[in-house]
Amino acid sequence: MARIIAGVTSSHVPAIGAAIDNHRTGEPYWQRVFEGFERSKEWIAKAKPDVVIGVYNDHASAFSVEIIPTFALGTAAEFAIADEGWGPRPVPVVKGHPELAAHIAQSVILDEFDLTLCNKMEVDHGLTVPLNLMFGTPKEWPCPVIPLAVNVVQYPPPTGNRCFMLGKAIRKAVESYPEDLKVVVFGTGGMSHQISGQRAGLINSKFDHAFLDNLTKNPKKLTRLSHLELMREAGAEGVEMVMWLIMRGALDDKVDEVYRFYTVPASNTAVGHIILANRVKASRKSAGKKVPAKLKRAAARQKIQRIRG
Amino acid sequence: MTAKKIVVKDYDDIPGTYVFDADRSRQGYHLNMFCMSLMKAENRKAFKADEAKYLDQFPLTPDQREAILKRRYNRMLELGGNIYFTAKLGATDGHPFQHLAALMTGSTQQDYADLMLRGGRPVDGNRSRSGQFEKSKTPGKASKPKAASKGKKRRG
Ligand SMILES: [Fe+2]
Image 1 (cartoon, each protein chain N blue to C red):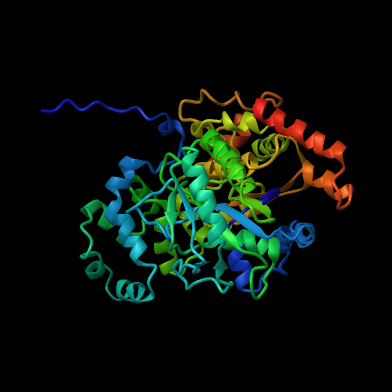
Image 2 (image 1 turned 60 degrees about the vertical axis):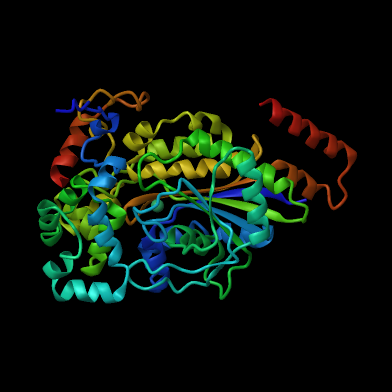
């Protein structure tokens, strides 16, 4: 059975990608940002996910103003790197997992989430920058990536609550996939930022820290944030943090915060990064290969709790 | 005459912000499609060679056309442009994004970069036009709208 072992949030600032592509990661300004991901790279090298589900938003690359899908799932075997105006980023092509993606599509649509499915989709910095931050700059990405593009460009994006519920449906889909796969979900974007209008440059660190705290401990609270409040407090473009709630919804109610990193600024935004791990996995790991009956019962209890909650 | 109901949009209360909704998307459709066309190298070349001629391909309003030619980025947003699209125009000009951000906030690029390094534009004093949301989100902190508005004035 496939299972979701952890969730990661990561900034996807294009300037981070540019710093990597132009070999400027050693500059003090960028070092401060990249240092924050050193431990994360170690963590993910150990966690060795078989598949990453990358929740991100397209920035007028694959989708213009012609068609605006709220949730677009990439079901292709491969996703080309978009030319965002200065040539495609020199990163490996993103290989998908079409079988698992098709399974997720079928499961969540029957669960009443009306996804758009993409058998061809170019991916932009929104997806590739987080891959760089977590995996560095390898010749090939270490595992398949299923892109899930969320509209946050044209108002309104899906609500935080809808995103959270979609995360739950994705989890259900993953757990009903017969192959033994370890899945990590990335929620990308954020944190507070505004890049348009006279209010550009807005940063609200206090809001960001509270958001991170609640993401770990009390995500339900975040699902009640209105778009208006998100935009007012975290900037017009900060509203993209709803994407993090898809990741969070795909995890257990109670999770372990493995790691957290926060810095201001990266170009125009606050960078927020967190790694949350499901506890079931942690207890399995500490118990060794054999899962004792006691833990199985605990897992069953957790499952019941989840259904109740 | 058809009686048009005026829709009140709660997010219009956020200062210095143009929320890109379905109305703006329709209004700015051709402006944004023009920007989208700049994703291709040959189009960027053609645009740079003769901007006015290149723009003739797109049924823009005179205002939109002027805003593009004069690189008035806030005006473009006002006329239905979206920042992720207009950023492509800035990139075509060879500008880093912070150049556009500085333009939109009415400051120099250096001043804008410094503002970011100091932790960004404070939210206090920048929440709403009406001012009604100022204290609601900072219960633990004495409000310091003076400092915030001073920073804003200096920067923007
Ligand atoms: Fe984004």
